[in-house]
Length: 303
Image (cartoon, rainbow, N blue to C red; front, side):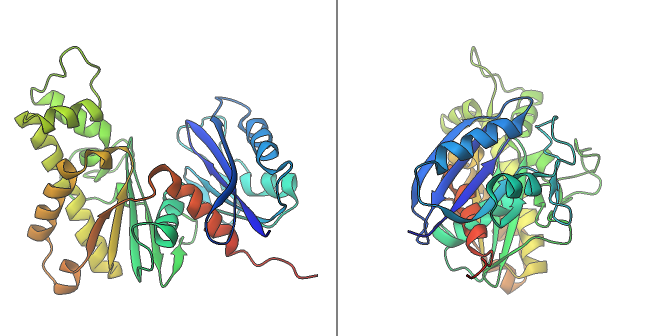
């Protein structure tokens, strides 16, 4: 049976799977991302998945960024031991297979387009709302990666040039308003108290569901920032579909209802107003599915 090797690399978890042409995982495994010597852990994970399984024809990798497609290098923010690390060449040498690389959020978008909530969309934006905000674009059925591989980095689109200073150094970035930690930060600054629990986005969502006005306002504020970014991106790219995933999306209606209302308010042009916003159906599997799809796009040598 023909299959490909899909790899998803993040700051907390490494995942790999053998995936067939229908998107089914034949074998899979995960392990925590170590602070150092990540490549040794990745090599062991690849061996665990591939030994005894059908031989893969190619490899697709989704990795936290930033990255540089020209050199195949990655410098994930949450993986300090990798700075300018030649990931694509290392995996290609390890496996002896054609290897393709993209950002993890880009793979999220590609996975949702292939198998998830955005299946078959003509022009899709995938957004991961979590500790940070990542994004990826799929247009005309293909991932749009950009010159260096960082296209779709919508978390650092400025929605307010006079707004708050972002951790990236910019000002008014949507991540500063809508990411999980920043939802919590704003709520705490405005009088929210998580009681005896540790303050995080999950507890904030619980309190918002219980009617806490500050918690509700935090999600409304974050949703409005997301709406501004979506409307702006739709005006540029003429999106048909937006798929939202990541831990914060688990808040469900607490996020998606105010997002729908805000988008209705900020979007004006008819083609912008037509964009459909959907919640991810693949969840944590989306990036791995996208990495597999990326590998299937790699032309394989004929014999």
